[in-house]
Structures are given as C-alpha cells and as structure tokens.
Length: 315
Image (cartoon, helix red, strand yellow):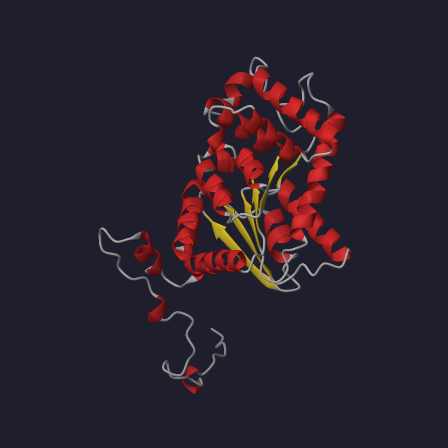
C-alpha cells in the first residue's frame, strides 16, 4: 500500500484561551427572572446576544427617535390587523409614538370591517367555491364611496377612509388605525395594486379615484420619509412585497430631491425573512449609514413584546 504524506500536527502554533478574543461572554448571559417579577425585570434579564440584543437596539432607536422628534414610520401588512394587534397600534398612534403608517389596500378592508362589525377575514376556500368570496356589499360600497369622496377633495386614500370611519361613528371605530390617525392628524397612507383587493370587482369601484388617492398617498409617504435621516425609524411589519417596494422608491425620490435620508434605523419584523424587505427596507436604504435590524417571530407575539418594551422605556 502506498504511504500518503501527512502533516506534523506537533508543529502547530497554538494560543492561550485567556488571550484569544471570544464573542460570547457571561456578562451578556440571561438572568433568571423570579415568578411575579415585572415585565421590565424580564426585559432586563434577556441575554444581550443576537436577536435579544437587536430587540434592545430597536427599542432604543424608537425611544431616541421620539425624544428627538424624528419620525417613526410603520409599514404594516394586513396580517397585523388579522391577528388582533389593532389596539396596540392605535395606542401607539394616540400616544404619539408613531409619526405615520402605511398599508396596502387590504389594510383598509380589515380596518373597516373591524370598525364596523368587530370581526373580519372570511374563509377563502369555502367562499371561493361558489364565487361568494369578496362579495361583501357593505365593505365595498363604504370603502369605494370614501375613496371617491377623497378623490374629489384631493385627499389621500388613507385620509379619506379614516375620515369616513370617524364621521360615520362606526360602532367599533376604536379599533380603526385610520380613524385614529385621522383624529391624531398623522399620515396614514394606502398603497394599492389594482385587482388585489376584494373591493375592486364591485360596481362601486372607480379605478381613477383609487389611482388618484393612492398616488397622493405615495407623495404623502415620501414627505414623511424625507425626514427619516439622522435618527428616524422605519418598521416593516408583515409586508413582503408592496410596501418594501414603495419605501425604496420613496427613499430614492427623497435623495434625488436633496434630502439626506441616511443614518436611520430600519427594522423588519416577520415570521420568515423575505427578499424584498431584506433588500429594500434593511440593506439598500441603510448602505449610506444607519442600522438594519431583522427580527423573526409571529406578529401576535413579537409586536406586543416590542410595544411593551418601548412603553417600559418611555415611563
């Protein structure tokens, strides 16, 4: 049998463990939180490692932005409403933590249905079979009517819907993000892809009005994004495609016009990492400076956790 050459491991240059730099240190470890402790104690006992450290950085970013009067913008997928988080977002609006919010067209659907009936979200598989999916008359006629009125006034789509919900005094309007934004006089914008929402097939839908009001909302959002630089925060929560694309274009417009949109905090919160939020919210916009934070978890757990953590810091 041929003898293959081997290396002499006795000649290795070795180092001392005490001299070697280590990334994980016991000072960053979690601490035991006794039963009955406060949430603040639990939060302080989290490890200062990986996602737990990222959570602390995001909380500090939001608190700092609010203290410095820099924008905190939430880009929200409609799933955030469907898992019962409306009261928390409304609370942030009313407390002045959020400077503005943006949603896709599905956002106004769930927001209206919750404010009208206290319930939303139909069984697609069951209703698709007989073509009754998306055929709720009240949802389509109310929202399409509000959009048409908004178009006549030169308003954005979100403002039109928020005003209509508030002025109609819908029974559960306390759950409406758009009504809360209307009362607080902060931007709540809606960015529509024609044909994606259940109100579009109805005869009350006016495509020109939808386009006009949604384009106005893009301009409003861009104005908000122009102030992000040097300490603002943008949160993308559960939008995988449309809002990350809208945000990227808004950043480009602002920079083209000379606004220094850099050195801000960009965060993405979702159940999995998607390409567009990672590239268009986190990586590309912060390439000139800032911090990018990606937190993975179920919205119904992660968002309440973040909200409670911020409130602890603002006490």
